[in-house]
Length: 296
Image 1 (tube, rainbow, N blue to C red):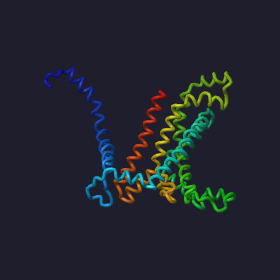
Image 2 (cartoon, rainbow, N blue to C red):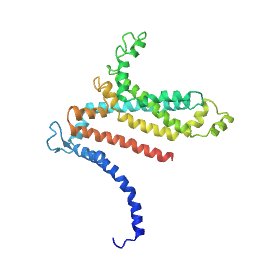
Image 3 (cartoon, rainbow, N blue to C red):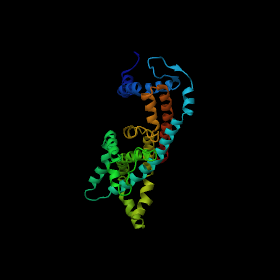
């Protein structure tokens, strides 16, 4: 160490300084993310339930065998996949249409942008309670549809409608968020391209099909993957509006995990469900990275 010259010390300090700044954040991540994740992985191979003061008992793959034969898990997984298929296409296409509309240079257009973005800043708890009132038997929606459906529609109390009613809230909340992402992409497209296309006869709606959609492909892929991950992890809407009912028809995999961990105190089984959820989200994240690699 005594042989180090002042020049070498300066070089070492320059190399170590960034890591010293990162060290506090890294410690927090280890304590709050990585270590709990490792513990959850270990607990998924143990029996740790009810009496949480006891030491976890190693059971190997027993929890995974239980999961394989659990009909409620497969139902919740099916609900989650249905949520994915029902929400993602709408959140990929509809916000792009909105972004094209609010990207017009018209007077007062910023008010429309703010109006579409307002649901994003509203707390999901507030939004869920408000929509639950709208969906009530004597709520606003049934009052408006009284002439068509005199008895009303059981939006949240029927297995046929509950999951789709919750989906509508997710879509309503997400439209403005993804619209802003698309809006940033639209404003990066030079106006000269549209002018040149207009000379060639590509104008009106056709110019968006010929120019906007091809140039927005990286944003479309980004929104598709982000919305898919969000739909896979949906919880608040279900918890506030339906509690997973009726008859598990709106119960998603995250809500089932919560139910097993905090209602039934089956921590090890909940960790097993969490591990499956992690693998699903990991697959979607890898897809996102591969899509980003292709687009760049």
